[in-house]
Image 1 (tube, chains in turn green, brown):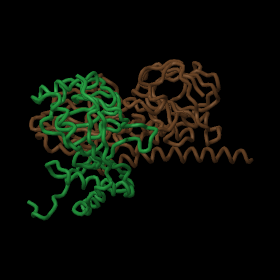
Image 2: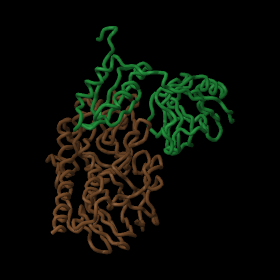
Image 3: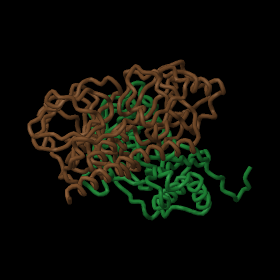
Image 4: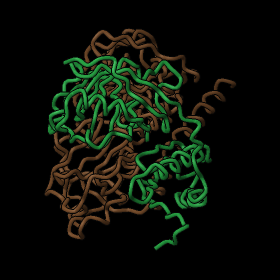
Length: 223
Length: 333
């Protein structure tokens, strides 16, 4: 048991000899995530650390084990764990226009039926929320969004689709996101955004960054 | 310049991989067998990261439109240059107009064609590797096809006598790993990962003691294995977290998946362990239908294996430098 004003330490585990996973204690929450973002930004500059990869309340560090030891990195993280917090001002807020339903929002009706709501109500709840980008992963430029209204929680498809359209506005379990390009996906597709979320010719290539806020706006609903 | 005369669906341009972009969801990619690429490049006096062609589907035919030097590493694929045998892991001069043919390997799975100077495709996000899933990098983000013309970068090292007579002992002979209990399977060393302790003792024992078949549903993204299903009762889906090539996940089916070069940056299945970096080339050269055997090791063991691997590469560089020094001295006389 830790005392009330003490912060529980993260759990470390090895991913081979060149990577370390650092997991915040359960349950998932935004204050842990802010700590993860702050740590990621700091650790990226450490000697011997090659890459940082924030996840959902966790952080993976990839390093050269001939330059630094896992034990050294753990000690450095523990030193910062109780103090660091993320400078929230750095995140940007984006408004994303969405065409809900229709050919490129093929699961909208299904989601509405599953939730026991009208299509208009689904769109209202989806556009009302302000989402936070927790981290980018799975596909280039794909942000895992937190903030989905619980009424819209929706299990993934039994059989993933082999390809979904670029810009697919999707729901997977309690998470939301926009799938940047044509990729396989098991998430439920409720609409489409024209915004380009990933472009290798741009710097940075990804539109989103951890800590950004997103608001969806209904351009129209196709039925 | 070189022109592809025939190629299968999965032959691509790769370097050592794309680093620094995992945090925006971009896979590492790069050759599956990084040791073979680095060795081939060093034998040619290239930077170890110079781009090559990774060949998984045979036969592969390419015609050279310029004089250059090549090394074929990785799988033993009976390479022939205008009908004459090309020694594997050996620097070989090539004349403009010559045709190189790589045939189905007798040992290993993936062959690497490295060229003096390295293949010149645009650098995308700090790498020349093809990302087949996201369709960028390499040659237009896709596999090579008949008729593709590939440019070669200028070689910084002058062509020397070494080209006709220099090679290296392949890693399966120079860096053997045989625990003695592998029953003909490919043995790879594994460090236990976060969820290892959550598996019951008999499940852990089963993981180490069983042979795991590499199923046909295996590719650059991951190897799907088949064996007696591991017990997954009590395991739950985890919060998404970063994973690396080599990570061995256990989905609800109990049949492990090993993440490979084109792995997603993040995953959520329980992780039994991670194949050590120094054994990833052994996995890359293991064939569909072969069995794998996992051998538990510590982080210290893994680092020692990595040191041995780097020493083997370092020796290629120093041997080549002394060879070139010797031929330069001969020139002065």
